[in-house]
Image (cartoon, rainbow, N blue to C red; front, side, top):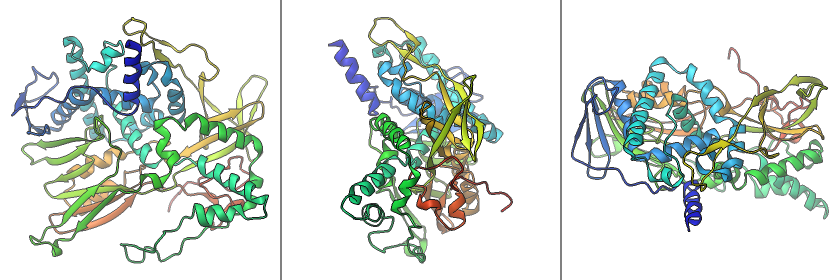
Amino acid sequence: MRKVALVSLIVLVLLGFSISQPRAQGNGEVLLPQAVPGLQQSVLVLTDPVGIPHIYAKNAHDLYLVTGYLQARDRLFQMDVTRRQASGTLAELLGPKALPSDVQTRTLGLRRAARLSEPVLPAEVRAELQAYADGVNVYIQQAEKAGRLPPEYGALELTGVAPWTVVDSLTVGKAIAFSLSFDLDVNNTLAFIGYVQALATVGLDGAALFSQDLFRSAPIEPATVVPNAEGVPPAFGGFKADALSGFNPETLRLLQGYYRQIKNNPFFRPALQGPGARAGSNWWIVAGKNTVNGFPLMANDPHLSLSNPAVWYEIDQKINNGKDLDVTGVTFPGVPYVVLGHNARTSWSATVNPMDVTDMYSEKIRADKQGRLFSVFAGKLEPIQVIPEQYKVNLVGDGKLNDVVPAPPNPRIPSATLIIPRHGPIVQMDLKAGSAISVQYTGFYATREVETFRTFDRAQNLDQFKAGLATFDFGSQNWGYADVDGNIAYFTSAKMPLRQDLEQGFVDRGIPPWIIRDGTGTLQHQWIELKNP
């Protein structure tokens, strides 16, 4: 019976469910430095009848420290699962069955990208993220000492929680952005090849069926809400059946193997389902000239998955009674800033913009006599970056507390992550055949999207809000905006890859970027840097 219960718990966790008790509710609570070590001044927290905390702080440090404390009180296990899933350390919590997921996510490297991102953030952002982490850790220490950790830890035979860090918050933020923007080309490539090969046997054009009918990239109806948004008709760019000549059988075998590995991993489900599966998010704004009181109206319905506990954590944050900050809305557990909401003067909303910001590459790999690995690009050998890895597992069910040990040797558990510097991590490789598949993604670099939300929270006018768009590097969103001055606006923001062939107005060998591309330099499929625009 106990094993059945543990298995059921693990299934619930992987689906995003928690059995923690709901947050405590009350009329008001004054948090003093004695109660929450690290506070510089007293902080008032009012919890309303539906459990939403309203924080009244006298400085930013205390505001975010208390935000971390409250989120940990209410959502600690959820936060821990999210950071571990994105970091590739979930097996240290849930046990050996999570190892395949750990390998897949650690290979992609969202946590590596989070480490790159921390030093490029402004000092005030890093300080506020550290204050938030300190608040989380105060709660963890108090809960461990009092034996009040969420019950999931007891069921998993764990008596402690790893301290929260700034990189953890950045990793959680990247995990959310990843789920909204990562777009693998596996399904498109395999489907295209299947249609071309199948229809060739009866003399039909499988490429035309794929591109013009089944996977057509044009709207079903020519409806639009922005004038001239469809001024240029959808173009396909010369995609054709002879693009098959660019795929060798070994690449296709590796691609099929990768698909089998990730298809049942919830972390990759949005990427495999494609943008159509995320359809439905919406927002609308009515200008003040069309309302009774002269102020704009805004509504937002972001279609994120329903889970328990919820994706969102609602909160109200004030500094100096709203003089320095007065923002209310929803955060992601693990991140201190309001992501969607309003302050006293501005409000904002968001939906996903499904940009193509991911490319997969077919690579040629070589090894020298010393065993060093190289990729082949433009006929030259380029060293592959090797990052040693050690995976650990929690031996749940053996009756020992905190029995987290190194994973036993397994050919499916690599000892290192391999990265092709000009592209990204290798996700599948057959060294004997000299073939590999790599992935390049805008989220793999030093990015500042968390800074965007700090800017939004404080924006007092349209220009200040627009300044926040400049740091939203990946996650590709459509933003709605309205303010008390009567302004309404619509923006799209994210970094978009510039591809060699597309920038020159053609598709090299008819292989578009939404199927696997050439990584050897034979074709003009590389991302290019924009210098001195």
